[in-house]
Image 1 (cartoon, rainbow, N blue to C red):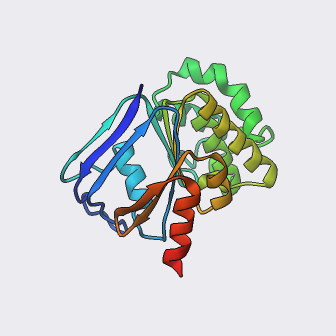
Image 2: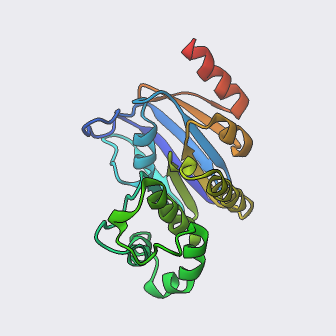
Length: 221
């Protein structure tokens, strides 16, 4: 069984406007959908970036078994001066996919993103919702073993949100692993097998969604 392991992570290297992690010990199994919640600055995004290998822990280690992709922020990995079509190739290459693979997926990506009328326009002309739709469409077209999502799943109109959420469910059924940060407790409760609550760079609690959401509300008072 493929696992993504985070064991005995000490404080992560300090970055501006990030929360350092400490005393993190976590094992994520293949096929799990894990939700991460916590107040702003609690370390949620830092944890995802540490999983993705962007931040290196000062102490401890991170073990990854499988291909991993991080979808974080609107337009991350895209070039504002390239067209949407060109950015599909660029972002795909950053995710480790050959150009031929992205060519074979191009029509499906464009259709899923609902950007047929804008795909050959410069990325800088896209709205934030359009940018997120393109990023989600590329990141999930060629499914990685492990997909990390930071906040962007709720971007877009209700119809696109529903499509994105259904694609995450499809990934779960195909035994892919998904870890997502979201403030949408309803979505997390519906699709997650486990949830994590972060507080000041540590895992405050981990368990089934109902328990973790209740703990969050109790901490909030």
